[in-house]
Image (cartoon, rainbow, N blue to C red):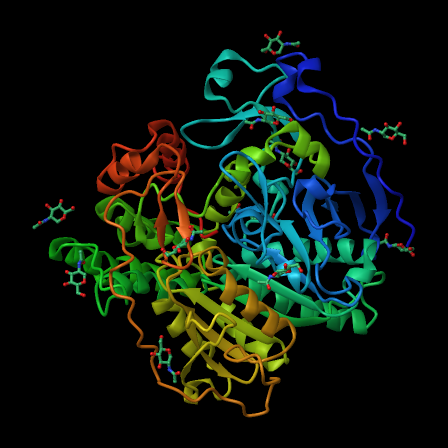
Amino acid sequence: MARPKTAAASLLSLSALPLALSQFVQGPANLTKTEGYYNLTVRYKEVASEICELTPGVKSYSGYVDVAPQQSVFWWFFEARNVDPEEAPLTVWINGGPGSSSMIGLFEEIGPCWISEEGAVEYNEFAWNNVSNMLFVDHPAQVGFSYSDPVPGYVDANMGNIIALPNATCPDYALDMGTCGTYSSPNVSNTANTTEGAAPSMWKTLQGFMGAFPEYSANGVHFATESYGGHYGPIFNEYFLTQNELIQEDKLPGAHEIDLQSVMIGNGWYDPRIQYQAFYWFTVSPGNTYDYRPYNSSVESMIYNALYGPGNCYDQSIDCNNRGENALCEVADTFCYNNVESVLGRYAGRSEYDIRELVPDPFPYGYWRDYLNSAKIQQALGAFVNYTGDGGSTVGSAFGNTGDDDRESGTVAASRSLADQGVYTVHFAGDSDFICNWAGIEVVMDHIDAPGYSEAGYVNISTSDAIVHGQVKQSDNVAFARIYESGHEVPFYQPLVALEMFERVVSGFDVATGERRVAKGEGFKTVGTPKSTYREGNATVQFEVVPEGSTYNTTTNEPDLPAGDGTEAAAKSKRGLSGRSTKMLSRRANQQVSRPVRLPRF
Ligand SMILES: *[C@@H]1O[C@H](CO)[C@@H](O)[C@H](O)[C@H]1NC(C)=O
Ligand SMILES: *[C@@H]1O[C@H](CO)[C@@H](O)[C@H](O)[C@H]1NC(C)=O
Ligand SMILES: *[C@@H]1O[C@H](CO)[C@@H](O)[C@H](O)[C@H]1NC(C)=O
Ligand SMILES: *[C@@H]1O[C@H](CO)[C@@H](O)[C@H](O)[C@H]1NC(C)=O
Ligand SMILES: *[C@@H]1O[C@H](CO)[C@@H](O)[C@H](O)[C@H]1NC(C)=O
Ligand SMILES: *[C@@H]1O[C@H](CO)[C@@H](O)[C@H](O)[C@H]1NC(C)=O
Ligand SMILES: *[C@@H]1O[C@H](CO)[C@@H](O)[C@H](O)[C@H]1NC(C)=O
Ligand SMILES: *[C@@H]1O[C@H](CO)[C@@H](O)[C@H](O)[C@H]1NC(C)=O
Ligand SMILES: *[C@@H]1O[C@H](CO)[C@@H](O)[C@H](O)[C@H]1NC(C)=O
Ligand SMILES: *[C@@H]1O[C@H](CO)[C@@H](O)[C@H](O)[C@H]1NC(C)=O
Ligand SMILES: *[C@@H]1O[C@H](CO)[C@@H](O)[C@H](O)[C@H]1NC(C)=O
């Protein structure tokens, strides 16, 4: 397809703009408009190399698929680095939330670059586009750079939601908060509010992209996600397969089949009836492999009661899933979150995303958020709105109103069904994550009950560095991998095993060795122990807040303290709080602690 080269953007310099206007997004000039499959409008541009993928000649595009009036879904694509992009498979990545931007996965986990504390673009040698074309999608509408109507507004500093302004002038109260910008008009009608309801817009986004760039999806499609992706992954992909059938019956003119090969889900949230219990299993009994118990016995029995006491979390979640009413599910989920889940932060001061760390946790680094809110980057990406990680929580609220988080939503049956239809399904979990911990996911795997899975055992995963980073239990095209010394975002903490596992999966090989081709119904099983018994112990558990600016050392699995003002400050901060910058801390704290909205399963 002839694709006009985009002229290098002639950027307006900030100083040329009136001060008031400089807060707001100018809106992109010169997006190329084309039609994808299924008559979907796609608007995009080529992204210059220095923005993220630093490898010369490896192309990147970003843009929007207009999936509905007032629903434009942002995507960012990178060609494969080491394979001819027209010979490589396509992998779609989405984060969870609900309402979390996939820029999290791009900049903290598997994208071609990461952003340093100084705002520099750094090359990620463990990027997943080493082996596959990669498409990152901000989904559903209003998440990240996706939008409904772009309007001038600000984000309320306390509640975190978007407030529209009458015009593009930033009033004093919003100037003080420093959050003036252009945002999606916060309307819960212009996005999805359930997992099932979000599937069609994801499918349309792929129809749009695949139609605009057919050369990048000619070699199979893979779908990778995490966290709330335990909901999204099974349900969306099951929907894709159903759509494929309709296409075969000529019922969706203009649409193209998605040649789905694999689904990978990291630290997924599938069944709240199991996974709310797992908060207790992981922290109290039988506990975790870090020999770390965060609570005293009084708090332990409080959680036990909040979970199993009559009419409490477990009963409410059963009720929600039996009766399915929005109000029941919303109340149940809020109850469970407040009394069973968020207790970890409240009583132990620990991160739900990594039990080894106290809050505020500087890992993974969040410097990319400021990067995405510069006019230069917005122009380079063709963005219409300022970047918000969670769409000013509009999408979170929309899903909150239906209590989707407390619904199992058919995720277990869909996971099984994908496997039965021959899709390679790989579930994996960093084993220090609490929010979607592996104690719960192991039980979810038993419920999925894929053929042969219960007779398989755990074996070590081999990697090119000859260090054992985890174990896997696999039966044919279904696997569960436990990754050691890893919080919620596995590729950040354990980039090598994550990439090698990904490469094995997209090429159809077993997770443990990458040497055996796997397929449904062949009778391949890993032969090992019924339980994964390796224990890390508490050597990497931190008992002081790790200062902002520290780096995560993937060799020691411990923080390397910020360099700069010498060993004195570093030694101080190792002992206590005196070395850290309060400004940085409060910025982080705003994101993770004091905001009254719940922590997303991102
Ligand atoms: C947009 O395209 C026009 C004509 O193709 C060109 O003159 C202009 O410089 C471009 N603007 C930007 C910002 O790239
Ligand atoms: C989509 O476009 C095709 C032509 O490319 C046209 O025949 C068809 O009617 C259109 N469908 C819809 C739903 O607009
Ligand atoms: C990823 O690809 C780059 C470029 O070819 C290469 O330098 C790098 O070593 C690869 N990463 C890994 C972990 O093999
Ligand atoms: C923008 O709205 C504010 C508040 O309503 C008003 O005071 C101001 O005059 C408006 N500015 C412009 C340029 O219209
Ligand atoms: C929104 O983006 C503009 C650049 O287009 C930037 O100047 C402004 O600071 C951003 N707002 C926020 C709150 O980041
Ligand atoms: C929200 O969007 C819906 C559908 O686009 C529209 O009908 C409604 O008027 C909007 N609500 C507000 C408050 O703007
Ligand atoms: C660390 O683990 C050891 C046993 O390996 C245990 O005795 C000790 O109490 C643990 N420390 C903490 C703070 O949990
Ligand atoms: C247990 O921990 C909680 C929260 O830190 C504290 O309020 C309470 O006093 C402790 N109880 C006992 C018996 O130590
Ligand atoms: C969820 O969205 C559907 C479809 O837009 C709408 O009919 C329903 O009222 C919404 N539910 C809630 C609780 O907001
Ligand atoms: C598996 O790895 C562990 C280290 O985590 C090692 O002690 C053990 O010997 C390995 N097992 C096999 C069968 O290689
Ligand atoms: C990580 O720790 C190891 C062992 O202490 C050290 O040799 C290495 O330099 C550290 N890595 C980085 C990137 O600092």
